[in-house]
Length: 142
Image (cartoon, rainbow, N blue to C red):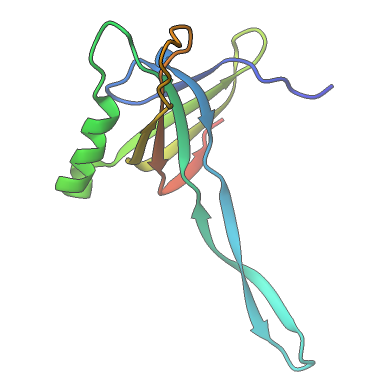
């Protein structure tokens, strides 16, 4: 039987994690480096690792201002990396709320903030903010 999608937790300074409803985790990819060899065919070996961005979709609270993502975005634009890069912990829970996996995303910073489209007369949908986070590296902790 395959693993189902259960609860998750994401730990980032300054945000109420319950607002985050959807997470696209960063992906690790190892590049292939081609080397010419005597028989004319390239031999490929493992190269450097690249990490994709993470995406967080969060509900914007109706009763308070919410500038968490904007504050982090503008801090990244106006200060040194030591002031804006943060580490993020992502936890995947199993059916009994036991932590199955934990990842540490290192060197994170917000690089893009966007919101869902607004439609007149639509009072039932939540406003969703999508936050794109640049990630330097990912380590599996558990």
